Length: 501
Ligand code: SF4
Ligand code: SF4
Image 1 (cartoon, protein in one colour):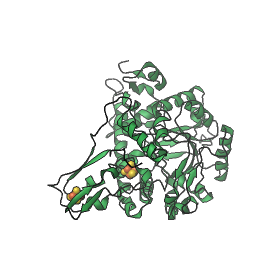
Image 2 (cartoon, helix red, strand yellow):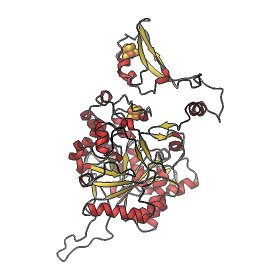
Image 3 (tube, protein in one colour):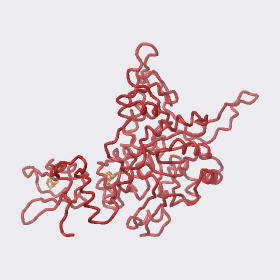
Image 4 (cartoon, helix red, strand yellow):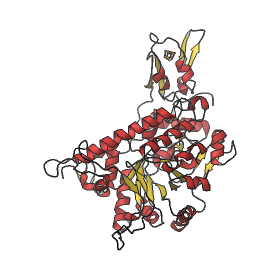
């Protein structure tokens, strides 16, 4: 071995006129990049360990630091980029699978940015959300085919269980274990304050969070970690995880080193044991099997809670969704290929799955064609970055969205994509007590509430601009969208016209 073939991705630039050698950067960096050299009497840096998380840059009291992408480069080659060459070097050195975190960063089309939203002008005038009521409440669940009234004119329809959201936004599944106790608490507290839902992910539910049960979606994944009667009865809804956008078709693996204390107890597995979620659920090999699990969960909880089935957006997603809509599930959640993760094989994350925008449009269209759109609500996730993405998703046919990465950004994540190392300097994707305490859950919850309130305000302005006064009236209203720079096939799948038409 001997030679280290990989040149560091980043360079630490320290302004020596500004640096006062306070050693804050040394104390703050869990990757041990910075060191004070007593002999030289100055700070030094080991750049090979830097993941560009910005913790040192943000906390340096004299703004003496910046991290830059190295301009050290290989001979230009459009086919063999520096990144590709370094990946081969790494694998040749370790013999292992490359691991990554967060969502697919590749330069694939971002369809949200090729879709534009309409606005009213002369006729059907805009509505001013500051002066007129604007309804953002959303109900998720199976909708009845018709409304019946009894002889007294009272409502007489047996309405299946619904989730009521103040805005069509939920926090997506992130397990305790992949994120910290304080990150989990921030999400739970914010969901309660906002009147929306957060999702346990596959790690079970810590006993401290049972108090947030009415705002909690409890997940049942293939490993069935932490699933028991109390867990099922505490959640407001269940989510059966069949797939995840960041790693469709494969299972999960939380290393035994992270299965300690609370994580081990909550997952109901021994300390130090690897938490391995198999790729399939070992009792689900058909829609009929899925139906059995859906109804077992309903039976266990008196048919009072909706069941969500989560799938990754893959090639034949519309047909899969059609099966799920007939399985008794109340809600389908679809996770696009840019969806985040605590850890995934890089090659899978970057090469498997399809964009959420195309998956959503084709699922909504297929369910409408088959006359079963009312059987299920559709929730989409996988890189919802702002309020405009939400408006576009709803107009394409979604009932609500899941946000994960943007929620973590609100908590302070700097998208360094190193969650799998467990050394998150922002206290989010880590179980190290000294790092976890860097995230104050009260402040975290407040920032999440601020983010959702800001987006709610913008959603209302966009709705008002279109002359629409409720989310319900926007749902599947593709006439409100136009494509820009898209080819005919893409427009056809999205079911929208080109700008100018
Ligand atoms: S935090 Fe800033 S001022 Fe303090 S030692 Fe590091 S670079 Fe120097
Ligand atoms: S959660 Fe932490 S480790 Fe993960 S990308 Fe964000 S800052 Fe980096």
